[in-house]
Amino acid sequence: MMIEEKEAIDHFANYEVEIIKEGVGTCSIHHCNLWQAQREVNSMAGSSKSGEKRTYQPRFCPQCQNEYKDRKLVELGASPEYGTDVTKPQEVDYFEKIKLQKGVDLRKDVVVKYDYADELSVNNAESFVKWITDNIGQSVKVKVIRPDKYAEQRRNRFMSEEEKQKFLKLKYDIETADILILNSLADFVDKELEDINAMLLSVKETGTIVILTIPESDYRLEQLPIRLRKRINKAQIMNISSKGIQR
Image (cartoon, rainbow, N blue to C red; front, side, top):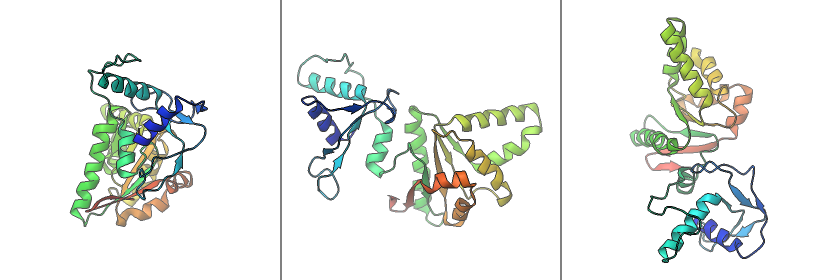
């Protein structure tokens, strides 16, 4: 949760503010509905890069907010009001962390562009994928797919019962993933494109698709099926270079 949101939410305690309690999103820590203020409020001065104030609708998890208040009470020498065990480390909402640090919302589709010719770009892209699996993967199901390996398993599914079961398990993991990472759009031959497109179409609508691509494979974004292309055309774009992640 952003600092300015915490202060705005505390401000709500003294005023009657209508709260939207459904359809806003889900807390990645408590898996409960996020709440959002019905009307916009002013941000704190200096909270944006430009230093100017802006208006926004604070969105927060009520359980995270209660824990935050309890920890503040304990710091002041009082007892926790909501029964929080303050001896336990406070869990991190990694969705919000990456959103604040890199400006990317991993609850929405992302196209990650990097370059094989730039060694640091490749390393940064690999680090980004690892960060997602190590951190976001603590609270939701993350599945990383190498398309060449997927195509190979799909071809081998009729070779034996064991290969069939391995592929069915892979297929199930893809269809139930909260975040599916395709690493990368360059790592398969053109004749396998139809299989990869079908695989991407099988991702659940509430899931996130993260596609890594290099300049040489960008053309494949235009070869996606219409339904999938419309979805990816709305995706966030990240450019990862030797300078790090750029929007």
